[in-house]
Image (cartoon, rainbow, N blue to C red; front, side, top):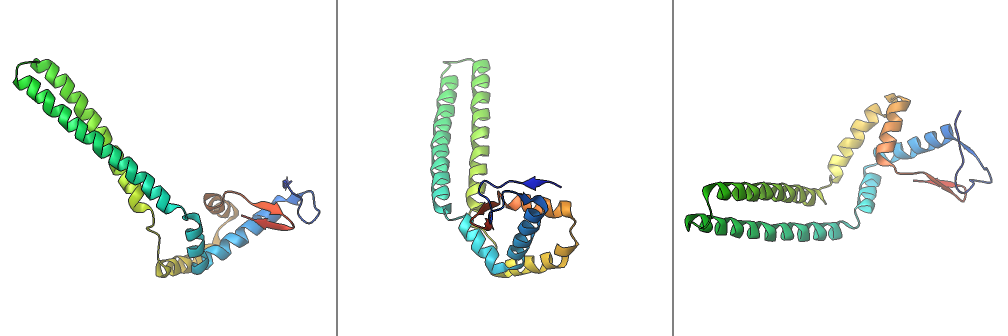
Length: 168
């Protein structure tokens, strides 16, 4: 069996068995998923800084909008140069394709940023969390060790032992 040594001993024990940590983590995770109120509380804790993130995304989107305006004016000047016989058709096509590629990339970036911004704060309400908890309650005790471990690892970053308590 694998034994873990926490950075701070738990209850004067220098080593803690991995199966005990796994059991603790699973029981705590299970409590959270079976309690919609606790889930909502955890979601709110995780996303305390969502306003700052949204503001950062908005400024990035605004910067991209400015760059797109510049590209549109660049395209217009290029068309004026071609229609005024300043550049040849071949040069017009090459530069036009460069502008098109750059614009397509920026539009993709903008779509990605907008999608990220729209997903912030779109968290399930209490009724949806109740349904999730009900569905989880039906399958929770049927999961094998590997599936439990996979679920825990997707949602928990670490388990810290301090002053006789384990916290994640």
